[in-house]
Length: 284
Image (cartoon, rainbow, N blue to C red; front, side, top):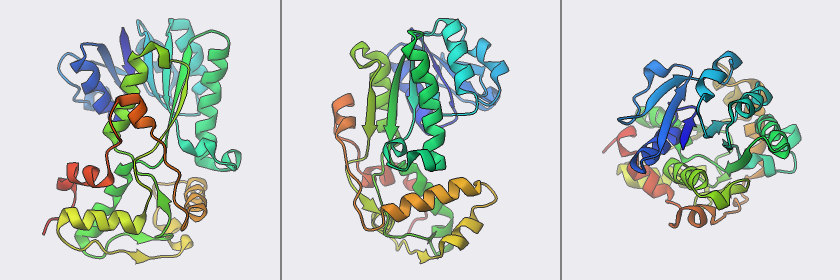
């Protein structure tokens, strides 16, 4: 089996490549800029820009399975080229946002729905099997707090008591490995969460314990927060996040045991994630 791993600069994909290599499964690390990759020994690289369909055929040549990030712009074309290449299985890293009642109106959820539907439509024709991974909050989102914590004032939060279900990227990679390598899991959909429902303030408290120093925050307005991220986040996506946080303000996130069901071990806690990424945050 040969597995094409797209988005190989990402944290989930890079861990997945390690797991595949350790298991002796041939993997191909794909990225828009393959020259910038540092894959495990024996893992080849290939250019696959999910925004450029011209790169699809070469990347998919000889591939049996694909780990795919949810890029909606050319999802139908990717599905077509995967079918033509003889791919048998695509695992899509989607989002639990697609399960929300307002998914059609939420820009983040809608983009993932587009990718899901393109692959599911292809699967319905018998082209290949599609497995959907729908994680909640990535614990790695907390890395954006490292710089303001070093500055001493901490992050500016528009909805500090919004709950999330932070999941460790290694748990996601291990879940992806499970569905890629266990035939009975093909063609299924999985809602993945971390083991705890935590507010942003509670996550900062966990970081404070790991850092051995305070982890303060300030409260900002949604308008000011949106302005602060405008340079790298389109307004519709900022609005989608604000809407999501508002919906979960003071309301614990529902949790699943899917990580344990797929991997055989409980999902890692946010404290474990913070300890694993201790070097990214300021010290005493």
